[in-house]
Length: 158
Image (cartoon, rainbow, N blue to C red; front, side, top):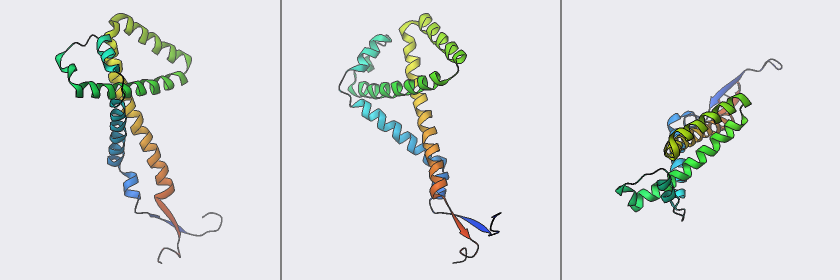
């Protein structure tokens, strides 16, 4: 220390390896995304049928109950991801925001409602990325609080 000239040492706690682990961050992120998908699958409304009709997806496999439930959960995840993406977009400067919104309007006009398939995939991917980023931020905060212990030089040996 520059003020009291005491020598301090830092010792890692037993939680430190876990808080530094990127594998644990991946597992927590995937579990939280899976929880949201399962939560969305329990929604009682037939949202996926309207989505299938909107994007002109007519296939025999969309009639299976588990495909419809999984689609319902993924649509909720996609909606959450698009919501988070638009929140970030609205915080940007006006030039970037307007350029992005123009590109969005042009892609919808050029491709029709089938472009919402791409939006659904982009929403899910954005939600996964946002979840991983949030988990890493919380793990770093926990590392600062619980990952290391300051010990005085005299306390180190005891």
